[in-house]
Image 1: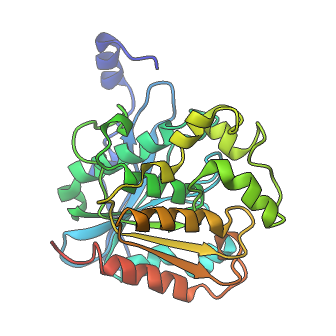
Image 2: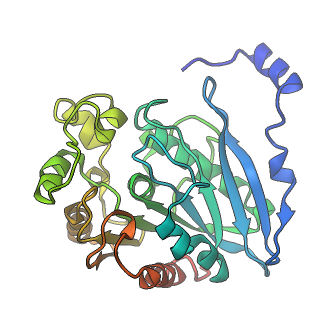
Length: 312
C-alpha cells in the first residue's frame, strides 16, 4: 500500500479535509440521546475515508456498545440502507430503547481490497471507539460485535480474533484492543469451502466455487483453487477456548447462507468449550424473510443484556 511521505502528510493535514470535525460536533436526538454522524475512523491512503455513525441513548453512561456490521456479500450495501424486513424489525431503535449505544460502521469492499482488509477495518473501528469512549459516553469494557450475512461473518471474525496480533492490520488507530465481549451473528458464512455443496442441497442459486462468486472475489481467486486463503478467511478456522459469548441466529430455509454454516460453527465452538447458542428460526429465508421477527430481536437483546448489559 502506498504511504504518504511525512512532508506531504503534513501539507495535506494543513489544507485537506477536517476528518475530526464530526467527532466534536454531535447532535441531540428527539429521544434525548446523542448522535455522531459520518465520523471518520480511518483514512487508508488511496481509498475512501472509512466512516461510522454512533448513536447513544439518553441517560447516564457509560453505555454498553453494539458495533453493527452490515451485510452485502462484502461487495455492496451500507449501514444506512436497509430492506422491508429490517425496517419492520427496527432492531437498532430497539437496541437503543434497551439501553445500548450503537455504532454502524462501513468497511472496504472486495473490489476495493481483498480479505483481510475488511477485518482490519472492523478492528480499526473498534479501536477508534475504544480510544474515544469518554467522548461517546460508552463503556470500553462492554463491546459487542453484531452483523448480518457478510457482516455476520466479520462480526464473528472480530470475536474470534480479538487477541490475534497478526490480524490487527495497520490502518487507523493501531494501539489498543480490538476485542469484543460478545458476538451476535445473523446468518453469516463460517466455512467457505463447503458453501457450494450446502447451497446445492438447498436448491439455491449461485455457485460459491465459481471465480466470480462473492467468496472468491473476497479472497482473490476461486475458493477451491486457493484453499489456504479460503480457510484463512473462514471464521471457523479461528475457534478457540476463551472466545466471547456468541449468539448464532440462522433460518433453516436460508438459500444464501444455509443453516449448516451456523451448525458447523456451533459444533466447533462447543467442542472448544466456548459459550455459544445456536437459534434456528423455523421457515426463515435469508434476512429472516417469511417469519415473524419480533422474537428474534427480543432474544438478541436478552442475550446482550446478559453479557455486555451487565457492568463488570
